[in-house]
Amino acid sequence: MKMQEIREIAKSQGLKTGKLTKVALVRAIQESENNSPCFATDWVNSCGQEQCLWREDCIKLAKKTS
Image 1 (cartoon, rainbow, N blue to C red):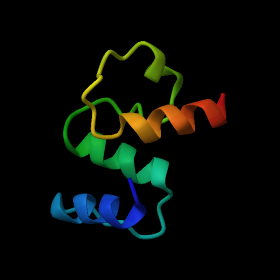
Image 2 (cartoon, helix red, strand yellow; image 1 turned 45 degrees about the vertical axis):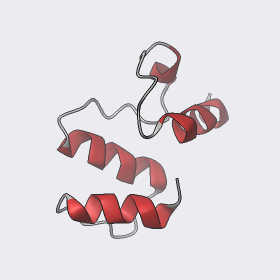
Image 3 (cartoon, one colour; image 1 turned 90 degrees about the vertical axis):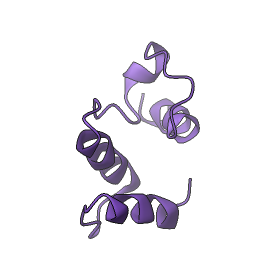
Image 4 (cartoon, rainbow, N blue to C red; image 1 turned 60 degrees about the vertical axis):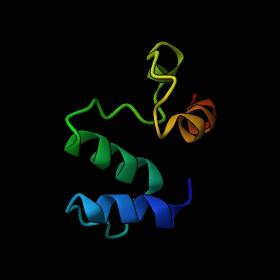
């Protein structure tokens, strides 16, 4: 997902996007939705959230950071 789309989601939830990275912004959105801020962590391998909005990017970024 592109940063502009992520910023729009964040703003719709009343979050300030500032100069947050993609990872930080998605985690802030996850927290605002009362979800675990697990984006781009090793948790992707066992989370079981196949329908997660962030899954595709999560998998890509988790591979880069591991």
